[in-house]
Image (cartoon, rainbow, N blue to C red; front, side, top):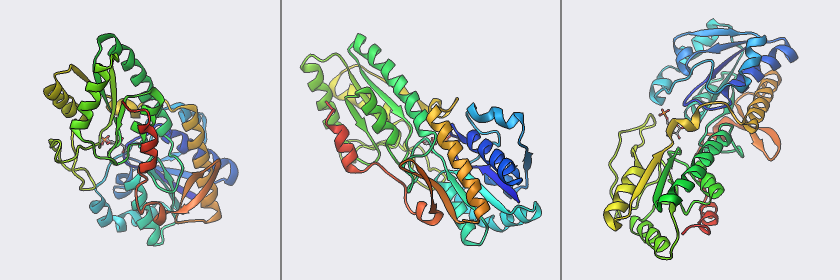
Length: 343
Ligand code: F6P
């Protein structure tokens, strides 16, 4: 058998671990070969690929962040229009099955291909942990560790200067990194995209902490967190590849507003792509490796149209169509759990 593999969307620690696991399992267990398409779906649209062999080089990528295949974000409309071209490239290269590794956009495209009869097994990835039907995606644990380490460090400097510190973490549509890093570091407030915040209430909380003699205020802000429209209007930052509005620098804008309203000194840190770079944690290496092995096994069983998923400690298959119906956002009760520690 000849398997095609690609990594699409934003990169994520653990992608190389999946590639290695697919190559090793395909060759070692089934004597199948693997072709890597470069830069996500673009490699299939433009027929750019590389043969991946089960050698020393592939073994050494386990611990490396990023993706040796390269990745790209492709506009979903362009992708839809290019599905025939993708099928053609797969035929031209004699590919029997495709393993796309990606987030919402990549898996949605995988689902379209599966519907049209292409043998596909998806592998979910994203630091945002917002793919539905899997308990967790690899990359999340690494991003969370990086955010936690950074916020721990901000606590000590904020305390020394009696400052308000806002830290913006990734999470455009789902606040998992913010929620977990806020809980893990004892943040005094966490703002997530799922629950609009009232700027007046945030200011009141800050004032209350300092009035009762507390030394500092740490607030974790997911990049997609938004204020209620009546409490503050955010400057917009363009449109993302799915046509959603982007609000750039929400933490900075909130910080400016807190300073203006209560005159308290605020410092803002935006963690940005640091959260996505570098070597994956052991948890992410293991999960990514298990996803790669199970995806390769599923390909050889012919269980197409599915995505590998973690349920408890088992790796199962779920239909791609079901997994891409909606994003997994933070449920209200999980936010309320964390809210017990706010203030
Ligand atoms: O989807 C993962 C993610 O890390 C988001 O949290 C973030 O908004 C986005 O990628 C950033 O994307 P880019 O690398 O295109 O700036």
